[in-house]
Length: 345
Image (cartoon, helix red, strand yellow):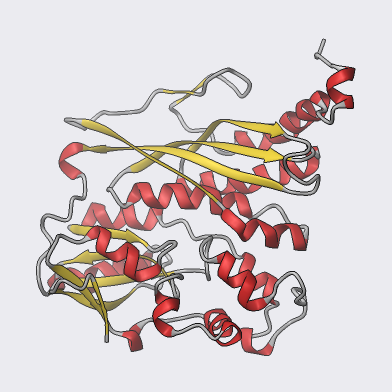
């Protein structure tokens, strides 16, 4: 018999709603199962037995992140099946920057009121993200917190673990002057800069559903809510065939914060602005908020969700491999000796 507390329910926490949410989640979780998963949903801990065959020194790599204020768009549009992809992406894209393959993922949802169908919709996105990343969803937590969150709002965060052979960890030590910087396009702002986006576009009062000519017929809501792309499969395929020297996940802080994190001291990425393929939504944000170009590149991905550094002689082959994986990759710059970190030319 399931437990139930009338007193707890009177305080705003419905345990039975939690049970229903778990039942609705199970089919989504099942989509993500991989051979390393041990046990089923509902235990106190998620169990996973990694396959370390062929690895001399297996190293675990972890990453954690949330979705941030992009969730406000999901609330306004009452659409909750994509933000879970963002949550997974923000974690696994960081992991792959180390050269690691994601193994498993756990989510955390905190809400004002547990509406099982809404929680299940969020989990459907988490599961889709895990499928794209080839990571198992082995656990999570849903916390109903009345009085802390508004009834129709929630927060979403996640945690991922991956694995890489120690000898294959990307440590940027091989980066040299003249190396090519390759861009992997983003789907839009991904899950970063939404506090500025919401202010610039006044999204709480904007028409989020009307088609806009400047967005190619898309609505503002569609353009902004597009989930973060997951680059695990194309990047692992590239690393299997070409020597990748460094990888940057372009998140909050944009080019100026993230690209230098993948470079040795004394080197910079010289980016050709004319080469960067920027979706129209970024121009709309810049114009509406009167945001300088420097701030745009220092806040948003500007159409580049991830970039990698390879030897200039491997650049064409790298682009070919990535395009074969469905990524419209292109060379957007090169590595130079400089203390600037990033140079926009």
